[in-house]
Amino acid sequence: MILLMETAAVLESRAARAGSPAQALVLRRRAEQRLREAESLRSRLAAIGAALPAAEGGSKVAQRVGSFTVAPSAP
Image (tube, rainbow, N blue to C red; front, side, top):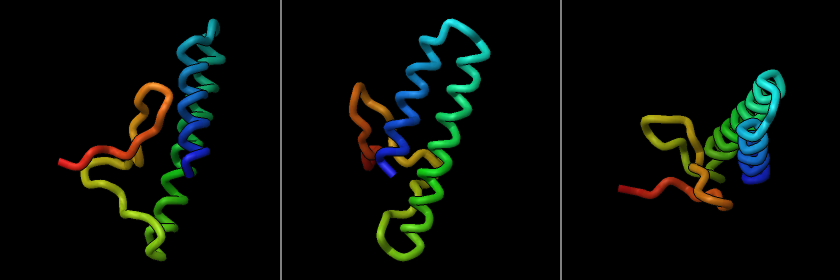
């Protein structure tokens, strides 16, 4: 799951630097697909008790901070 999320972050970063709008679009689509796969995996793991359920108010599993991916902080 973390690998999928990290790959999505790298793809987003590459999209931001892409010289071509078409290339940026493809990279962003690939990043979104990786995030959907990570969310699907998290859901399946949560169903068997091996992961926490999704946070209320959104489907983001984690947020990107610098070069690290961290879980959202609790209130």
